[in-house]
Length: 466
Figure 1 (cartoon, rainbow, N blue to C red):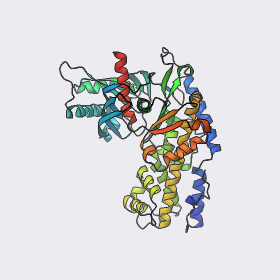
Figure 2 (cartoon, one colour):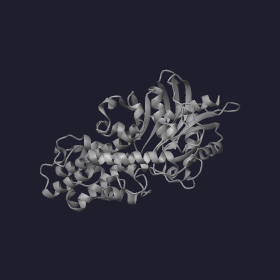
Figure 3 (tube, rainbow, N blue to C red):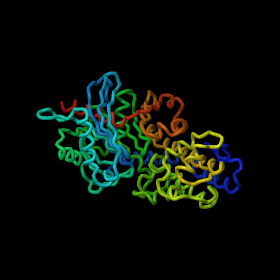
Figure 4 (cartoon, rainbow, N blue to C red):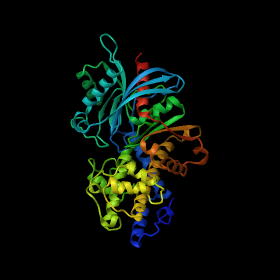
């Protein structure tokens, strides 16, 4: 663990007041293993609590997926993958050897879709995808079966139905909470006369896990570290005491943890700073998704912006100057932080471009740019270290499996693109798992896992139906 004397956080030429402010930030953002161990213990307690009853903070939602793909299945299957900022329609071809070929079309969610017309927008995208490829079924042709990756909290009632619990990640479409999202989508598809049947409702992490499992049968956990965050894992159904349905033949069930909500009820364990509290207070979902807000791509830029303004207001950055852009919420994208961390040029010219051109604050000094880099590094490192908490708690939930190979399939822009995220995550996990067991753990990028997994679950559903 870095300390406030870590050379990365000492700026030559900084004033005493500037260095003192940076030292204060390092004390807030850099976390000891002792602090993480306390949080992990609480995380595990919350997971156990969620296995016993509905309505708990960590929802531990049964996905109704109880089978594992073998990797030998073949055929073409379709999926809709709805994320936080984009959606995709996919056709996935399984080669029977653990490999997949995908063809997809990406659509950016409009502001109208995010706030009003989401399901009609999705249906129009499906229509575009099928029509552009002459795949639209007509006449007596059977309906196209599709998996639907829906990366928002739902109370799943069957493999192909589930009611929305709440919106997250910036979506807030009225009239949907408490309703079956498959029915809402199916109705929108019918309004367009599309012969498409949604056969599986899939959380994005469940999809990521099944995508990884098709490629590697030792896959036990699927995780998203991207715009938002969540995880799913295979649980022994005997531990799922709230489950009232028939016991699956496999003896296990994929559970959707919905771990982004951790510590949202009392703010008692995560290392909240004033900058996190400010973000939460001004967000569209205050006192919800506390864990997600500390580690996910949607929020890190805003945390950094709050820190930068705190420094600016004390005249410790940019000589106290700001801009209309810098003053606006969400004006710093997390990708700016990635670029800043990677900038090793003598004059930090990439950071200069971000400050002076993108954020419209002219005449930055090298000290200003160095401070910007320090803030970016601190916010990103804390994200990776805190991300390890959920990984460790989930792995320790099934300690019986850690004596054999365990693959963790991870998708999302933070894991794939944020500098050093993957390395810091793995190293932090290694501090809490015995070396004999840690050597059995593999972290693998399950790229496009959420969409591919939905198609694989559609395949499993079609096999079950037949």
